[in-house]
Length: 413
Length: 164
Image 1 (tube, rainbow over the protein chains, first blue to last red):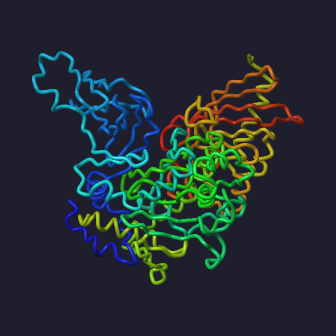
Image 2 (cartoon, rainbow over the protein chains, first blue to last red):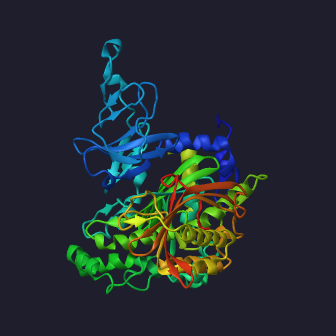
Image 3 (tube, rainbow over the protein chains, first blue to last red):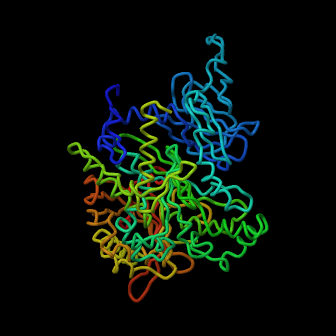
């Protein structure tokens, strides 16, 4: 399968081929190469605080469970009984002492080890060889990533500049930690999953797709619409497929990104001053959170965390939850409502993005179209550290995504 | 404690809800907006018992946000509803209660096939339980709360920019 896919031809410096969104063979190849052979984001440690706490996720075609073990470590286990393949755990989250299968009663520990087989006399094999499939895991500041196979790229190398982006998010908490306990809203898109990371760091569409939002809702985004020359937002390709729209240069006041100011959010500002000193805290409170995609499936969506889940060639799911800041629970109500306002199926923004993606998905199935991604290719700059930057309306971020995607699909990384 | 209401009153409440549904189906946004009280809560939770102060919902509008929602729909540029989805919802299995504070609570099942003419051209099926809190106002009623518990609320759901 997928032997004759010419990724070098389909992904060029300034354009990508429509079949990348619509061909089943390419989708299957992505599941194997990206979701089953490379590092992917699973969840955050704050979702499973106590021993036995777990959350269910879907990665590639597999259901997995991220669970807190007795020794406080985090395991990512395939949610499938090692006996006859029944799914072990049907809940999205919860707390368990162990995982037992409804089919024949096999019991697995929080580390995936097979603990008990009913009527043991008839089963003479070594239980050690029949545990749950366990993924290789690593984490950075509570963000847990995993790989189904022994990874060919180290976690540090994979995450690369993504660490700076995660730092920028965590640094908004006076305790340096985020807390994902607000629940996950999941929105279904009848569109290929790659349209999510593409669109989420596309700074060009805001004036058009979101014109109804701009017309009726005063927000921090108003600084980033209108003439291209007056828009101070920066688009960035951080390498490894990690991409960003950086709004910091366009903000006018501290806490613009929160739709707030230092008077209204005094207790938060005070806590930040106390934790980091005035100068450092004020800088963080001015710059705000990242708006960045970490390849392939994590989106640091300002004050939200988002996961991309492919579900088929023509469908995907976007998960979103508000990014609570540890030590500042007084912001939670505001963050919840902002999350619902921006992301999710009924949001003022994402509902329209979904419609555009679905229309594109339908249109791309006809003929053999190319999608142009050349915007800004001649004016983007390459910084000394290799990071590419350009105007917010340029397609530097999308080129960065596709460049890395091509390397992964060609087996170069 | 709440108690059942007189038959005539239940007919009035049902007629009001039928009218509200018709305005939503037909995208008569301003008329729909006029049905709401100042303390409006328009809510699609993920789970029935979720506390909106702690958990995200698919949708949780107060009066101000509901007003913004209607304004956005009325720009004509809310592309996820241009053109408006084809909708004719069916509401049934009504239960009517009068609360101690004099307000009415009405619960009912609904079935809403949505024809997504602006995107996939597919039918999408929405179903669940409506819970309304209503009070009498100038010969009619005002809506204080409309809670919509989808049967598949914890699953991924499609674009919900129409009025459910």
